[in-house]
Image (cartoon, rainbow, N blue to C red; front, side, top):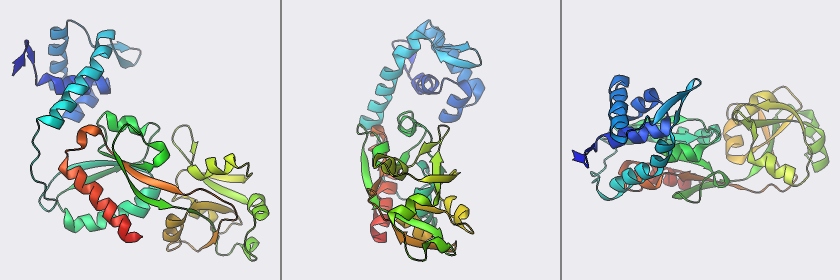
Length: 302
């Protein structure tokens, strides 16, 4: 179909090319071969009388004309999705949908692991593609590179739809043989012991509890920086170090490691974990089913 001499089928390819700035990545996203996507780019260049993507160094960049097209093209496709595309009744038992989820290893352990066990029977034909959080997770949603984001409420966008899934507080965790804690833990002891913390991404960003403690001028002697929340317990076993962990995760990790859990001797605000998705996905029945099931699962956990 053509509209003002533009093949409307090219809009999907144009959106992917503008957002990914790569023929190979765009091809993967829209499920075309690289040659077919290159051909689409050629036709788009001819229509707009502009190169759209040009090589700069080792990467492709958008021309000024292409930059002007990013928002309008995305808006047109979002409008089509929201008002024209008719969703079919969704049945997880027979669906073969693939849904991509961005989540921390904390959320994976506490929520997604038990969820996947349930979905094995409820949605045997579906695929759940779970990836770790990056440095700009909201942008991943906006660009269509993920269907759902599971993150702390301070990390999401207020411009996109979201729901709260659960709330959690923090505890102190140590190896069960840690003799420093025989008499319990005080703030002074908490500050004097060595700590294991988790930091993330290329920038090694601190987790929420680390920011919260810094804001209260609580000094910790950080001796080990782990690459994930679930890696922290392995660095505690056999040592006199301690860690500050989400209560739900600590209780799960204590099933697999010889750990003791103590109430924190200071006030750390609770965290709220949320699910967020792109506005254009509000009518995606499969995604809404997933969100609803995750909400129900966490309510059952209490």
